[in-house]
Amino acid sequence: MESGFGSDFGSDFGSAGGGGGKLDPGLIMEQVKVQIAVANAQELLQRMTDKCFRKCIGKPGGALDNSEQKCVAMCMDRYMDAWNTVSRAYNSRLQRERANM
Image (cartoon, rainbow, N blue to C red; front, side, top):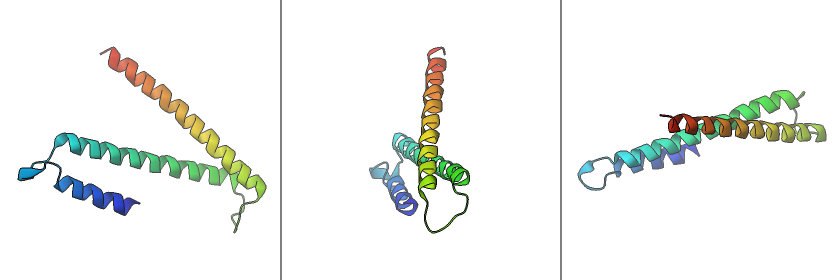
């Protein structure tokens, strides 16, 4: 996934401005925002996987038993619920602070 995204990203940079070889700052900013969003999603997934693995998997093996499967599913659900709650609160606070500026 990363290599395909990275190569597309690089080729888009080269053609960002159309003619004359100029780069479009708006397009560059959008591409940077996309890359940041992808990096944040990857970090979220990695942290959730690490946390839930440590919590739920006592003895790694070839397959998960029922209790491990349920634990992982519940752990990931709780992690995502917590992440969404914190994200909403953070975004709400940012909007309030921007409105007060």
